[in-house]
Length: 186
Image 1 (cartoon, rainbow, N blue to C red):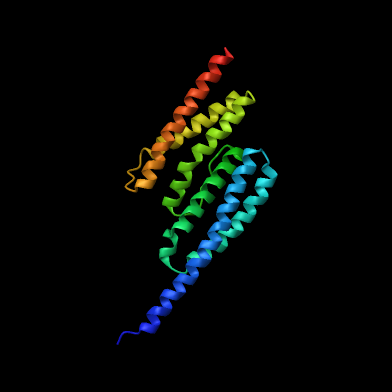
Image 2 (spheres, one colour):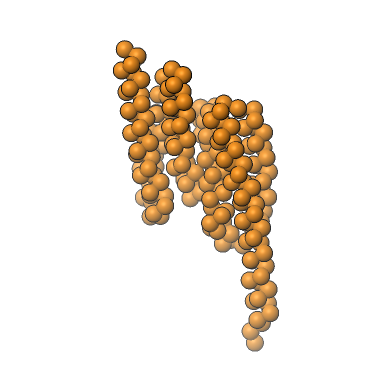
């Protein structure tokens, strides 16, 4: 005989954990945005502190997500992790000039990576205003490398494909900016 009480309890348990996931996702998302904002203002010490807080919140979020395999694909979790990836990559690139590898689902990593060029373009414009042409060129080269690597994939997911296509426009902006800086430097 069907145990409806057990089925109902499973649905209630999932819903309760999903609510916890949504709340914790907001915490990770908020800290991700704060990290990016701090890096944009060259407040790397503050960003480092925020990264530590964000890492702790992410651990708690991941613990909630282990309740059910479907949780990793819940919208709030997916968005929080892709923003987390973007923030860590941006912070890592500005601090060390490299992009760190992260232990997240490949899809979440790609989504965060595909958002990174937008932040890098903002940084490049800021640096161009300070006359730091070499750093602007390095950012252009990094965006070009990201785009080149992502073109090797065969993405079936529309969201990823759309974001990767967006990188092309960020790259074009960077190429125009570098050309403009080099022409003015003559």
